[in-house]
Structures are given as structure tokens and as C-alpha cells.
Amino acid sequence: MLNTVHRALFDHYLGISRMLAGQLDFHSAIRAVATEIKDIIPHDHLDVCITMIDGQYHTAYESGFETDWGKRAPAPLAQSPIRTLLWGEEDYLLTADACTDPRFHFKGAFSQPILAQSLRSRLHVPLKVQGDVIGALSCSSRQAGLYDLQDIANARAIADLLAPYFFALRAAEQAKRSAIVEAEARAREEGLRLGALRLTEALEAERQRIGMDLHDETLADLTRLSRRLERLTHQPEVTGEALEPLFRGLQHCMQDLRQIIEEAKPSILQLFGFVEAVENHLDRSTRDSGPTIAWALEDNSAGAAERLDQTVSTALFRIVQEAISNAIRHARASEIRVRLEASDRSFDIAVIDNGIGFERPVKRSGCGIGNMKTRARLISAKFEIGNRSEGPGTIVRVQLSPATAMQEALA
Image (cartoon, rainbow, N blue to C red; front, top):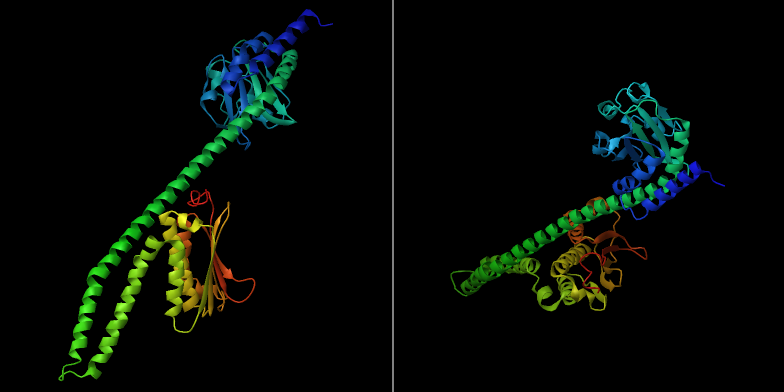
């Protein structure tokens, strides 16, 4: 049967457990239990020191009055006057006069509050969870020689009540900090991505302006010049043999300008959509390349390709253009296949050829491949290029996840 003293202690311990319930942060928790603890261990100053998960820093939460310990958050654990306890080197610390005890005043120790507040009697016990020290409970009094080993025993009982609760609070605080850091990192990444997308949009707008200027002015002038030269060929004083090379050169110039205009202003993409634009580019590029090149377009995207954001669509079209150009100009392919696929997890584009492959990446990894990689990064897409696994040739693959610009398209 419990005697009166033990019964009173038991009631205070129950009071501590009851007061902890519902406290959601360290400050409110320590202040809620301070009165019950004071009835067990008299003190002028009470603090709970919690080590951070990295084991290098700690934070003090105070009751009674505030000191610089509580203002330095977090503080290096190596400078704590009770570092040996926090490191698990001692099971408790007890002193009759901390103002003169050399254990609290080693070189580099932040013991100024002890002297400033004349905290003479001090006791410290560790907060342990599954054998690991996660902090310490400290009681201090301005009266010298106040505490003894019985107070240490009582403090340990209190620490056993506090430790699991404060361990959970520390885990919650760490999760909150991690969530904030992750959110800030995502915000920065999203800001960079949106900035890059706006830059891409501005560049595309400028390319379109250049395309229209070339079409309305330069190409028209060259067309008129070509017609004049054609008329000159019928004049007797001008030989057709002399003008024929110039005429052919002008025809080639106009063809090149038309190609520039199509690359600068993909009107088919804007007017008829992604799939038809890719199909048209495949047909025109292989037809104009000289030797016969077979091509195929496999659209398994269930319409997702046509629901792409305009900026994303343009970037992907540019990547496909470059991949097809590389297959024709560098890989010497006789067959090119473009495959579009979509699922609830991703949107994939693959440009596959049966050419010489990707055996010499130094020569093949020029500006074109660099541009494809950059465009993919700007729309947060995954870019891969390498040899085909099922035969000779190269495969260029671009993958968009729903978390990026494809989120609406796949909804």
C-alpha cells in the first residue's frame, strides 16, 4: 500500500502525463508540466534540451525564466555545458554549485546563463528512447546544495514520462522541416521550369515573327528576281547557258528559305495538331532526302498527343524534327519509325531508325543532341538516346510524366 509521500509523487506523475496530452509543440509541453515537476523537484529554472537528429546541434526549451540557452536555436552540442550527458558519457550530472564547478566551464562552453542567473544547484538526467539519448531534463536553483540523489531518482522518473512524448514531437518537427524544405525546393524548381517555359514561348514567338518576315519579304523578293532572270533567258543578247547556274542557285535558295520558314513557324503543328505535323514532317523529310527511306507513324496515345500544352507540344515537335534529321543525315537509315504512347503514368515518344547506330557518341553528340536534351529539360521530360536493343540503329526516347505539363492532357 502506498504511503502518503509515494501517493503524492504518483499523483504528480499522473498529472504530468495528463498535462502532456494534446500539447503539439515543445514550448507548450514543457510549460504545461512545469508546475507538476516543481512540486516534485523545486527549481527556479527548468529546461528540456533536445538534440537534433544529426547529433551535432541541440535546442533548449525553458520554463521559469528565459535565458540565452533558449535564444540560441539550434546551438552546437559541443558547446553545451552538459555535452557529456548528451553524448551518453555520463548517466547524470549533479552539482552543489555550478558557478564554480569546472565541469560546466570548459573551453568553449556556453555557460554564461549559469553565471548571469546564479544557477548554483543543478541536476541533469538524460531523456532516453530505446537506449538512445535524445535530450536532457535540467532543473536549476539559485540556492546552493539543494539537490541530492533522491532528486536524481525523481528526475529520472519524470524523464521516462517525457522522453516518448518529446521523441514524437521531435519526429513531427523534423517531418515538418523536411516538408518545408521540400516544398521550397519544389517551388524553386517550378519557378525555374516556368521561367524556362516562358523563355521558350518567347523564343518560339520570335521564330514565328522571323518566319513571317522571311515569307512576306525575302521569299517574295527572291521569287520576283527569279522571274526576271527567267525572262532574261529569252533575250538574244543573254545566253541561257550563262544564266542557268544562277537560276538553279536561286531555286535552291528559295527551297532553303522555305525549309527555314517551316522550322521557324510550324504552321501545320498549330493548325492541324501534333500527330499530323509529325506525319507531314516524316513524309517531307524522307521524300526530299534522295534515297528512298521507309517511314511509319504509330499513334497509340489515345488522343493525348493532341491535348498537349502548346509550349510542350512545340518542344516535343522540335525534338522529333531533330531526331528525324539525325537519322537521315548521320545514321544513313533506310527506315524511320515514330511511336507515340500514353498511359496514366506517362506520355512517351520514340524515334527509331535502322541506321549505323550510336557507336561513336563523341561525333554524334553534337549541337543537335544537346538541343534535344535542353528542350526536354525545359519541359521536365526525361530524354534518352542510344542503340536499339532489337537490332541495328538508334532510338531517341522522350518521356513526360503526369506531374509535369502532361497532367491535364492525361486527366
